[in-house]
Amino acid sequence: MAHIQTQAEWEEEMSKKILTFVWQELYFDLRFLEPALSAFTYKRMDGLLSFATDGMNLYFSAEWLLRVFEKNSAFLNRAYLHTVFHCLFRQLWQVGNRNVRLFNIACDIAVEYTIDSMDKGSTKRILSWIRTQMYDSLKKEETGVSAAILYRRLSTYSEEKIEALEREFYTDSHIFWPKEEEMQSPALVSAKNSWDKRA
Image 1 (cartoon, rainbow, N blue to C red):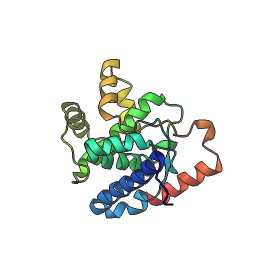
Image 2 (image 1 turned 90 degrees about the vertical axis):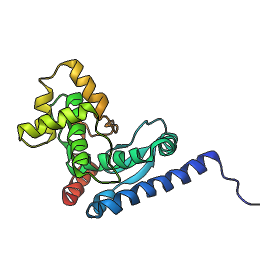
Image 3 (image 1 turned 135 degrees about the vertical axis):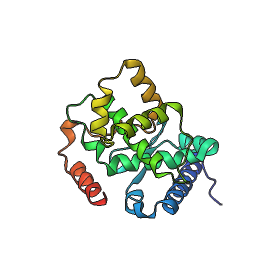
């Protein structure tokens, strides 16, 4: 008797197909990033509302992935690349003694600015007023765009402005980014070294 596929098995199969499709979309536009795009092991984790990574795995919820793919598949391209860039820029390992919330926002802005500056078909989006204002101000300062520079800038902003930027630039979850006390674990050191080589 033929095996009847369960809902969970179907979701797993569809998730793999979607992630392969996203990978291909990005690869066709950004072949030079192939080692970085292929770095993750995919791990299903129900309940997530975005991608997340610890530098080794790309965590996703099948329900979220299927829903977003149906409504806005192009967002998944951006979200995948966004998470890759966090690792390429080694932001997961740079938090230190900084305010975690502000550093997370700074990292998201730096990554989104990079993606928008690349102007690739697979990740192109219309820029909102908030993004346009932020990018214009970054270009005027001519200090470069890094999470560290953005962090210093954010520390001077009002709570209202920080909340607006947080909503605008949030793309993936940072819940698995290593804590300071975990930084020296062999697995995390190995992951960081691997991303250093890819970068």
